[in-house]
Length: 402
Image 1 (tube, rainbow, N blue to C red):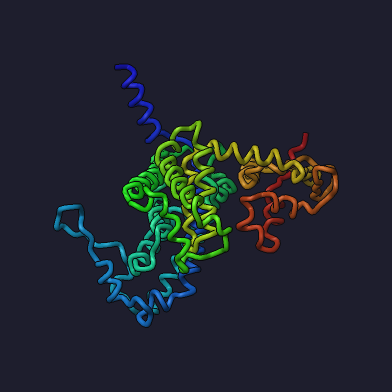
Image 2 (cartoon, rainbow, N blue to C red):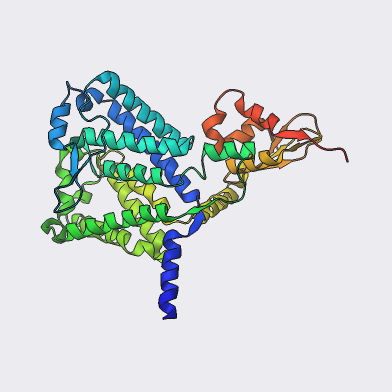
C-alpha cells in the first residue's frame, strides 16, 4: 500500500510540482521566432491565400472549415470556432490583423509583455489557420497547439525581457524562478502522444508495414528540395528509412520518457527531422518539431547545459574592469548575470577612471563590445546605438568610503 501511495505522490509531483521556468522560456523563444518566420512566409503570398481575389476567398474557407465545431463526438451541440476573421473580407481589417499577429510573435520571442503577447499571438495564429485551413500541414498544427500552450503557461518568467526589466528595477528576485510544471508536461506528453499515434496509424497502413512508404514522397515534385544520393531513394535503403522512421517515432512516443535513454532518442529524432528538413519541402515542419524537444528536459538541466557550454568556450571569456571607485549596483549584478547564461564575463574592480576589458589571453578590447556580444540576453536590445553603454554606466554606483 505504501508503494502505491509513493507512486501516486511521485506522479502528482511530476505533473503538478514546481521547477525551473528556464525550459519553457527557451520554448517560448523558439516558438515565437518560428511563428514570426511562418507569418513572414505567409505574407509573401497573402493575396493568393487570404484575399477575396485569391484561391481561397472567405466563402470557400467557410465551406472548408465552418464557423462552428461540435462540442464532442455524438453530440449536436456546437461551439463557435475561434476565428476573428470569420466573415471579414475587408483588407483594411485583415492586413492590420496579420501585421499585429506578427508583432505579437516578435514580442513573444523577446518575452516582452509576455502574458498579453502570448494570448494575442494564440488568437491571431488560430484565427489565420481557421481562415484558410486548406494550406496547413502538420507543422502548422504543431505551431497552433504550441502557441495555445504558451498562452496558458508562465512562459515569461525566464529568458525574457520582462524578467530582465524586473531585475533592473529590483521588482523580482534573482533567485531561480520556480513555476508550476504542468504546462511543460502537457507539451511533452502531447508530443509523445503525437508520435505514438502517428506510429500506430502508420503501422496499420500497408505501405509502412511492407517497408515501401518512404519511396513515394521522393517521387513527388512538390516535396523536392535539395538533392540526395540516389541510393537513399532506392531499395534496400527505402526499407531502412521506412522501418527506421517507425522505430524513431515509436521511441519518441515511449522510450523518450525513460531518462537514461532520453538523449539518445531525441538525438535520433533530431537526425530524422534534419534529413526531412534538408530533403523535403515542408516549410518549418522539422524546426517546429525539434523546438518542442526542450520540454522533455528540466529547466535546471537546460541551465546546467548552458554553464557547461560556457566552460568550453574559455577563449571567449573576458575580464571587465569597472571604473576606479565604482561598483555594480545589487540590481545590476542580477541583471547582468541573467543576460550572460554562458557566464563568459567576469566583472572586476578597476584601477583606472574608465571601463576596461581584456580577453582571456590579456589582449584589450572595447568593454561595451566585450560585454554585449557575449551576453546572449542583451542581443535583443544592445543593437540600439549607445544603449548598452548607457546601461553599463547606470549599472554602477560610487563605492562607500572605507
